[in-house]
Image (tube, rainbow, N blue to C red; front, top):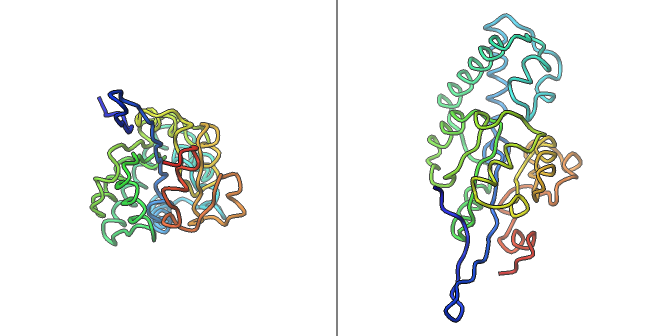
Length: 238
């Protein structure tokens, strides 16, 4: 059983439990930005399968799962087996590009994660990204220790804006949703976190502030934030 993340202090012989908060991170656009690899992998797949990519498809597909992108955005097929085949091929192409070219974290991410780790704030990935994509990137970065819990597309049946992925992340952290802050870069993810009853901090990596107004706070990069700011979300000045 996973450990419960909380602080304990002794007070005149009694143990007083002080619940902390949890940090849930979307992956692409928050920890890394591999959008160019995703776009190239769709282009390679389209060429390989002799398919057309509709104008503006990439923006329309942003934050959505392949099972929705392929039939609804690309209009390639409605057949479940073909959707899965296209999806598997696309993700293999994506990982090949990432391994060949490497991947870097977004500016400010590493010091921010180190700050959370130092302050014993539990962290979790909650993303519609396939698990192997995240595991591959973490391996390339050498960051396996930052995220002991990873919730991915394989763990949920509904994509964002449904809050399922974030609610499961909170459950795995053993925290109620209102004790979690979600870090997102896309409107659909903000909608999901809001539907889950969580605090939301948006990062302007992939979208301008004008498209992220439903978040509780908007920042340019994660290391603009302090522990005091995060605790203030939960009325905890400790």
